[in-house]
Structure formats: C-alpha cells, structure tokens
Image (tube, rainbow, N blue to C red):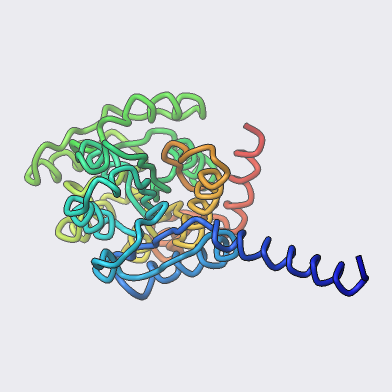
Length: 314
C-alpha cells in the first residue's frame, strides 16, 4: 500500500476512534437548586473535574426535562430544592427514565435518609455527597481547639437523636464525655433543654437539626450561651459569623470534588457508592467571641493541618 494511503487510513482510524469516544461519553445532567453562589461554585468544580470524561448539561432544574430531551445516563442534583424538583419531574416521565441514577450533592444526611423512601428514588440507584461532617472529626476539633473542655452537651431533636450512640462511642475514643443528651420534641423544648445542657457541660456541640438550629432560634441560643459563658461548636461558617466559637465545615467546591470521585466510580462501571461525607474540610473561628469568653484558639489553618494528620493516622 502506498505511503499516502497508509497515512490516510491511519488518520481515518484516529478520527473514527475520537468520534466513537465522544459519542460514548455518558450524558450527565447537573440540576441546580438555584443559579449563583454556592451552586455555581459546585457546578464549576464538576465541570472542571469531569468535562473531558462525560457530556455535561448544567442548568437550573426547572430548565430541564423538555419534551425533546434524550434520557440522560445520570442526574446530579445540587441542593435540596434541586433534588425535590427533579424527583417531581421524574414522576411524570415514562418507564425509560425509571432506572436513571441520581447523585445528590450538598445534601444533609437527614434529608437523604428521609428521601430514600420516595418511590421515585427507591426504584433507582440513589446516593449523595453529603455536607455533614463525620462525628469523629467534630469531636476531634473540640479536643484539638478546646483541650480544657471534656464534657460535651448536645441538644437532640427528632432528626439528630439517631446519631447519639455513634457520637457517644466517638467521644469515648477521644477521652471526651457526652453528657446526657437533652431531647427536643417541639420548639418550646429548646430553651429548657439548652439551660439544662449548659449546666451539665463545658461546651455545646450543635448537630444539624432544623427543629433546634434554625433562623428563628439561632440568635436566642447564641445569646443564652454567651451570657452563660459556654462556647458553641457549630457546623457552619455562617453560625461562626453569627456568634458560635468555631466550626468544621466543607465548602461547595470540596463537596463537589467528593461527588466527582463518586461519579468516576460510577463511570468505571462500579455503580454509585453509598453516601459519602466530605473528605476535605475547613475550620472557622470567631476570634472576637473566643476572646470575650477568655479562650485562646490556634489559627484555623494550624487546626486543619493537625486534624488532617490525625485522620491520616487512623
């Protein structure tokens, strides 16, 4: 065969290979709860991590599911509202959509647990990249940043009390004690429970529970604790800004990178893994509140370094 024809055949082979690879890229929808802010930040990371591996369609969830849409291979929802919106739309589709996997990101554990029973999710692979921090990491934060405190108080609502046994075990492993958890069954229980917890504890650990820690209660909780000179360790940098002493949390970018790892596992044919908590994290400290309580706390980057080292040793 003449050299020209050999080169032409090789070029055609390379071209067809590239075409087939592009055609074979799985179609992944990324449905946003809102546009802008944390949602765009997470979407940008997914695009950066996955754009060369999958065919991404990123949009607000309301902009998806037109009559001419081809069935995607997987749907990623970013935020609770996106998950609920997508589930509602899936309920209107035919059986060709019945097995499309759903990967929810920036989702609290309690919401994931509650949504699993939905018929539209129970019938298909469903997992999540959660925003909740591992309990052991939260307790390690207290031991590292506030070593003078060993007695930990917890307010437990309906959603959060299911983790109390694990919390107690993780605390014991670190030489800490979780005082008898104060149960909160209704909004009027919050302040009596908080008062009792303050009397019995050195520090209060906030667990994500909307019955207790919400916009209606937060300022009064923080003011009550400040007057009692008891620090609150929270789960959000916004709470630290409002008056909690410190928190360990993960940014939208960090949660999205965890989701990208899960998606690559799915793409490799291993299916969606179980719900995953963030691997990367940050620490926020309210230096003004700490100083007013007579607390000296190391710089957040030093605490993060030590916590990462401890997790690497385990």
